Image (cartoon, rainbow, N blue to C red):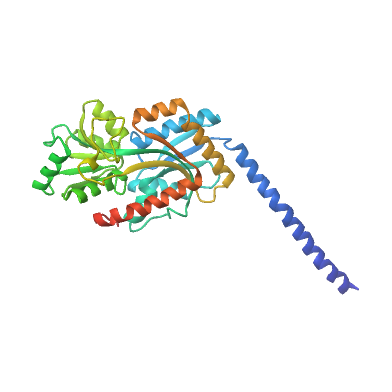
Length: 335
C-alpha cells in the first residue's frame, strides 16, 4: 500500500514542479519587463573612458544632460581613463547588467584595441550590449604656432628631410588620433615620433607648451584651440572638408584615399535586458533630436548620428574589420 502511494506521489510532485517552473518563467519575464518600463528610477552612471575636458567628455556631458532632462533622473559622467580607453571600457563590461551603469561605445576600445593590443581584459564583440550610436567626428591635424611648416605638403617635406625629429601627440595608444597619425605616416612615407597621453587635455597642454610638435585630435578640441589663436590648423581627416572649418583642406586632398572618422555611442554590459536596451536607445534618439543638443554638437563640429542597437553593433564590427589592415600595416602594437 505504501509503495503504491509513493509511486503515485512521485509524478505528482514532478507535475507540481513543472507547473511551478511554467508559472515562474512568465513571472520573471514580467518582472524584467516592468523593470525596463520603470527604468531609470535612480541615478545612472555613464562611464567615459577618457579624462575630463576632452572632446568625448564634452559631447558625453551634452547628451547626459539631455537624458537627465528627459527622464528626471541624473545621468552622471564618470571619467575612468587609462590604457587608450580600455580601463573604462572594462569597467562597463564588468558592471551589473541592470541599466544603471552604461558607458561610451568608442572607436578606440571597441574597434581599434582588438587589433592593436596583444591582450585585452574584455571581448569587444561579446562583452557589451550595443545600445545606440550618438555622434561622428573627424580628427583635425594641428601644430604648435611656431612649427616651421604651415601646410600639409610643407609638413610632409619637412618630416622627410628630418626623419624622426618631429613628434605627434595623441590622446593615448589605440585611440583614433593615434591610428590617424600612424596612417598619416604610412601614406606620406614619413617618420614621426608618437607621444601618447592619458587623454586629450594633457596632450593639449604639452602641445601649447611646445613639448610636442603636432597632434591629431577629435575636432571639438582643436576647434576651440584654433579659434582662440593657440594652435595652427592644417587639415581634417574626413573624406571632404568639414563645415565647421571650410577653409581647412582635407588630408585626402594631398594623400588620396586618406579618411578616418571617430565615433561615439552608448553601450552597457552584455546581458542587459533587451527591453531596457531598446528604451535607452529610444531615449538617446530623442536626446539627439533636441534643438539644444543639435546646436551644441554643431558648435563642437560633431554630427548627431543615431543608430539602433543592431546597427550600432554591426557598425562596430565593420569598423574593426576595416581598420585592422591599417593598424597591422603601420606596425603599431601594444603588448
